[in-house]
Amino acid sequence: MKTIPTPQFNPTSDDKSAAKEAESFANADLDKTAKINDHNRKERFKNHLGTAALIIFWIIVTSLSMMALILVYHLITPEKIHFLVNSQIDKLQTILFSAAIIKIGQGYIAKYFH
Image 1 (cartoon, rainbow, N blue to C red):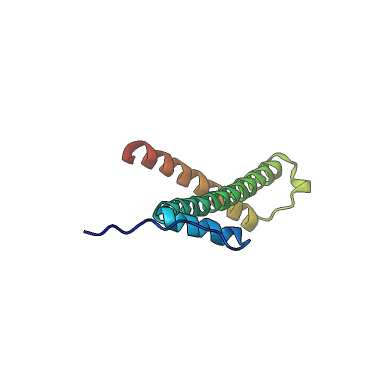
Image 2 (tube, rainbow, N blue to C red):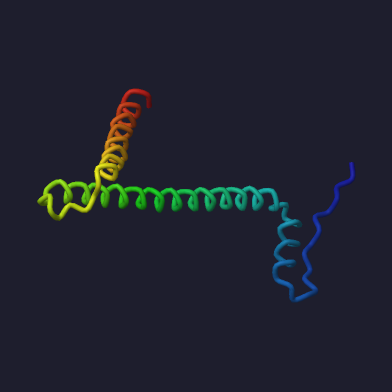
């Protein structure tokens, strides 16, 4: 059986990325590099999704907090300075209590199903 000699890297140009790729190819590191790059790409994507989820979470928390403060302020102030009509109060209560019920349900699910 005849053995094939390993090609030697001999740079002839100033293109550093091409030289690095040729050296990796000569050393058979391309598969390893491809796996590392694929992993890094997937992790970057996960980080972006995590950041987007965190931004959305804080927008929702801020909105619900503002709704709760408006509702409490409306309920504790005298009637002559009320600024919400009954339909608006009903909508705020529906949103806030729905959020509370969902949070309780999530706690139950997390506790007993995970």
